[in-house]
Length: 515
Image 1: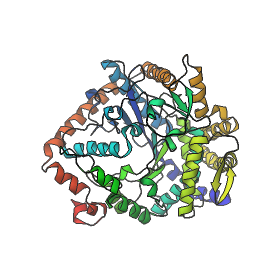
Image 2: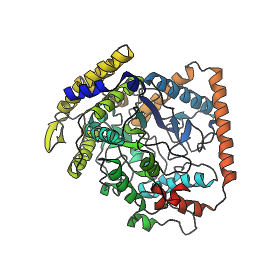
Image 3: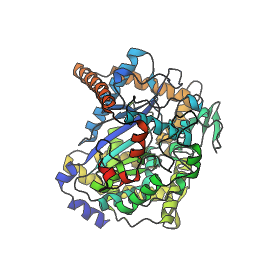
Image 4: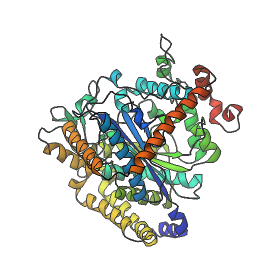
């Protein structure tokens, strides 16, 4: 423990003050009865292709809200709240749609009826839609309607090696975040219609696992049999990049069978490789770098290194109006600093397999008394391992509070310790209690009530006239930006697509990468 505290003391107060965080939050648009809204993304919200804060994820019905990078959790939460206020106000002017406050989806229509995100007629806009078509063919559209929160985090002056050390330790201890913050123990039966699963019937059309924390992060959620063959190592940028490069360029038989285009000439997918683009790779955390227009993310990473990490395993908390609160963000700060400052030995294929096993165990059975996880070839009680990690967070919380003033980080740690001491207070347990408490117990009824309550609470908050005007201007600017992109296109889509997926564009220094 001494070495962790010594390393902490070597990070200057100025560097800690430069810690930044931002949030990307996905939510389905739904009707009052809890069914998926099939309407287009409202034009008043601007162009999802170019708007800096309001876009769509997989589906046209799946809003994605994006904050900037902030120096404090409170400032990040404030911006996320303001973006929500704008979205709710626009939705209210056009009907009674609301944002679904749970990660697992609402009542879904048949797979082919779930609308793909639409981004206009430009080559880049068409490519985004074709990519989503490919995801639908490969994994099914229902799986893509799962929503989550991504937490983007950086600390100044970290090397690639330090970021990858952080990532390895994050993956080792990720079970703790699933346990403490998982909030998807149940699903609507429409999500698993026609699929094999190990869920139990809770009520009517609600399926669950009694001790689950996050079905979203278990075998039922974001998962891919094809990607299971991808044992990506996080021992360094070169090895990580090489693993992704192969997956992005190597043809994959089942996806070749789908074909690039259908008989009518429409595109089925962007490419027939294991991954169409970098974003298709599933993981609990990713190394990231802001890209230039048209640049491939892997090229940016290889050329300029890691800029921040994207934490991808956080469920929406249906008891919080915007899905996350500042206390949760502060706990993530502590957790990420701990991952950075702790010894981080190289990963191995055996460890990578064990971590995946631990993830699925915690996601599907995390609250089961006596549950054991695998660590260094032996079994250890989840609660004992969790207690060790929480104890090691204490000096980090004290250090941050001493620098920033107050006790906010200590309070975030106390929140986690209290949840460990009383598992009935875990969000996953509270969701099951909430389902049981509604008049006609069901997952959809519970989330519908919570979604309506969140809508009312956010609509009731003060909303400065200046904010309304600012968002209106942003929306209009984004529409004009999309038109400009469409007007500037000079090559046919197939030429654009073939150039974009060219292996040369993944490697710095090649002529194609520079184009």
